[in-house]
Amino acid sequence: MALIVQKFGGTSVADPDKIKAVARRVLSKQREGHRMVVVLSAMAGETNRFVDLAGQMQDSPDPREMDVLLASGEQVTVSLLAMAVKAMGSDAVSLLGDQVKIHTDDRHTKARILDIDQEVINRHLDAGKVVVVAGFQGVTADGEITTLGRGGSDTTAVALAAALKADQCDIFTDVEGVYTTDPNICASARKIDRISYDEMLELASLGAKVLDIRSVTIAKRHKVPVQVRSTFTNNEGTWVVEEDKSMESNPVSGVTYNRNEARITVSKVPDTPGTASRLFSPISREGIVVDMIIQNTRDGNLTDLTFTVPRTDYKRAMEVLKQAAAETGAEGVTGSENICKVSIVGVGMRNHTGIATTMFEVLANEGINIHMISTSEIKISCVIDEKYTELAVRALHDAFKLAE
Image 1 (tube, rainbow, N blue to C red):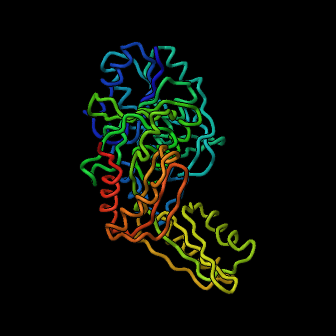
Image 2 (image 1 turned 30 degrees about the vertical axis):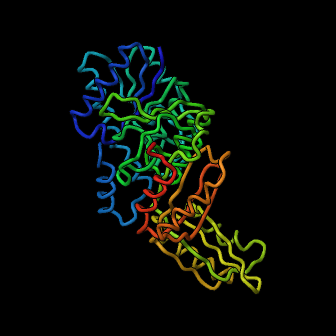
Image 3 (image 1 turned 60 degrees about the horizontal axis):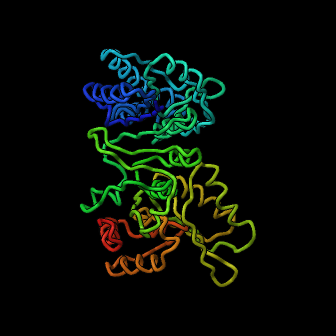
């Protein structure tokens, strides 16, 4: 008898019929003798609807009140699923984040899980119930409702699996698993059977939207086997697991892209100790994540700093940097939102040569200019003009024979 945590996304619980289908799927596993914990997102579109409603009340909605509003979406789905399970002759209980005691920090709308109280869930499991937990939400030490940000239900599910020492965590979504690239761009994209935590971390951080990066981090830390699979078929999905030797045979496992990128350049920065800190500290205080950074030294003890930030944070970052640049004596700040980051990922890069050269040659042959480059042991990323995104992805997918 295994303990299984299953998470179902918004498209999986989009209407009453789909919720009933989820109930049947969950009960089929329970009737095999397994203990079942189910994590649900809000119905598809509900979170966006709440955001729109909040915008009609305040131009910049209060973060605490946003959490109270957003958390209500999961409350609907968990209660409906519990009802569906009961109607099918089994027993279930729905629990919100503050009832489970999913403890988080107090950063509203972007909270991080600190720990999870297992007592309530284990008590209901011992009574033979299906435990249905609201994803995406938690509670502070002061009893305040918090939400975990986009993709937070994945994080809830994997964190629960880790805390409960579950045998596996199934992430059900509207795709069959993790693909070698986006099937909507490349028709020859192939489903990957097994992928390492490190590869999945890179793919998630570089734009792949199958799994939230925080959930993969937790899975790796606690060695939780995660399966990404479709709600609408019975096919086995992609297993995200510890690396093994077979994964090193291919140099590249996948190609991904991220359009949510913007590039900022601070020109003629005094090349003195502490200047970079004075530029980046205000951005950090705003909670803006800086990704790729390039420094170009000029004559006259000056330098240019170019880096990327999420496009959604571009305007705010520009405002903050213009003030910081003036204070440090830099000449000015320029930027562009019309870029995209295209990346290749694979643990096999560690023992294969010529991967970067091949990537650069492929892009050059397609007439695509590279603006920035960053690398790690298992990934290479290039910033290019956004208009070439699909061309670059298809060309790289073909060049590394990922359809085979």
